[in-house]
Image (cartoon, rainbow, N blue to C red; front, side, top):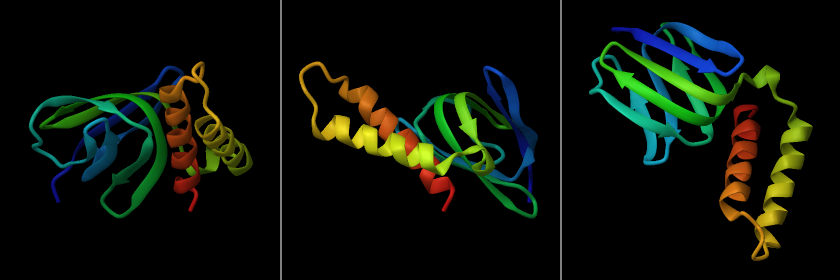
Length: 131
């Protein structure tokens, strides 16, 4: 299968850089799968699972926020946070999920609902990538 370049950059490291067959992740417009030759576009990343299909294996990570530039010959994702499963503490992720759910359930007029919902999506992404 044809390949293209994927580069994922966070503020503190180059998380991933390699030739791949396909990448899938969530955007504010829905889930997207990118293959070589994709039309050029820029998208906003929404928290969820990042799936990277290499020649002989699939890799998953928790992708939290950022944006992606998609070109026919490559994808660059500028991410706030992205984590391999081995980097995730399941107990902290479960606690974060519970806190976010409680903020949403018991919200007041001062509660930043968008922030609480994003925190919940991040926690769910972390937990899901471990399963």
